[in-house]
Image (cartoon, rainbow, N blue to C red; front, side, top):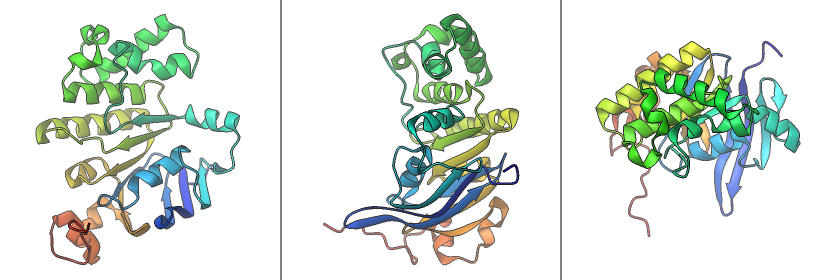
Length: 258
């Protein structure tokens, strides 16, 4: 098991009739590796992530996490697996009804059984780790800028020092400077933890900054997968069109279909 990839998808399929979203996804992420999945809107990135997280059940195929099959897990087994995960959501997904520190400590309190006093100390330390001062802990998320909310989301993702962290479009809605700050923080925090990470994004600047390997998803399949340094010489016309942001190329853009 120690030699198994931390995350491994084999021939994963998922459809919402009449549309087939995932059409046989094969993908692996080695322990301690950062894999970024790129692809356009509707390519299946979010569905892939939700299947790995167990939020969706694939129609067929295998998803193994740390060597264990997850598609047939019981509720207890899934809860145990989820405790080893951290997640930075695209929209932040912070609770406005509780202060920042409690957002960061939410999993520690409700998932790991920490008492509130200990959890608050951990939360404040994680807020410091992402560049936020202790006074931010008592604020409401609605009082924060978009960039600060993203930092709080990152602090929550690393609060329990998970083995695996998922990033869902981590720089969406941020200006280029703040996006780069968040990318740098992601790299630093992941390296500190030695975590395995799986990110989905359409932002190539983010992908180039945080990835060890990049995979491109198109029409429900992985059409290219390799070290990030090789992507500019991929030899794949679909990849080249996507990373260059060109309107012309083999990727069909059905922008004006009714």
